Image (tube, rainbow, N blue to C red; front, side, top):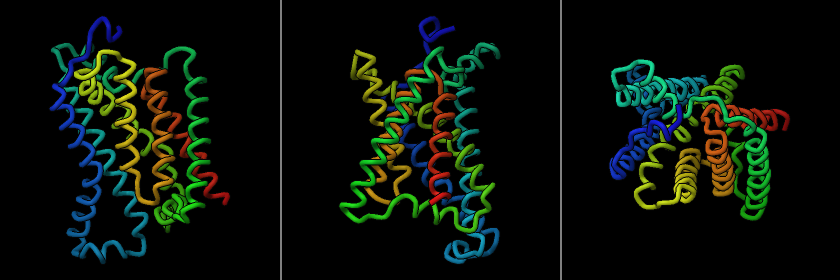
Length: 257
């Protein structure tokens, strides 16, 4: 069954924009709320909580808890919204909404090629800008996050939790919400996809921002490539797999450095 045979329901553009803002805000504020709750339960101030000997590991666990919560919330929300009285049909609509389908035939190699090119070009640009402006690189942030975190736990976060969670939200939920916004302004779907990819990549980059403008550029370029993967393969699963591959390469380079 395809989208042409049974179109997915759309939100009003203003509502879609509001939902996107609310979801993006939740990604930022939920980990802080969970940290505050943990500190409250331990009868510690936020400063004392952040200075615990195993603070890095606790932060990773909090990020994972937040990711699972938001993923579950969006999954239930959209299933309830799409439920039409038929469990089987509603499940198929839900899978299509989030792109939880196998990649289209003969699309993975072109998608992988585009992602590899984006990683190479954006990384080169990031290195050049770092050298010109003497800004800290993302590797410093990775080191701070890794800290005293057990490596297996960090690997689970970077290679499994983060790719699934981020692609579910950005190339799953935001992909559909962005379409609902831009179809109200553009008639050509190619323009809709381009505008949607730029918007999603801007959000994706800002959510990862914390090191330098150069690394922001790298993240933006990789996100654009993952949007291409989503469009070309028609599958968020493909984006998750290639996102995990990118993280694995980045982590390997960091550990070997």
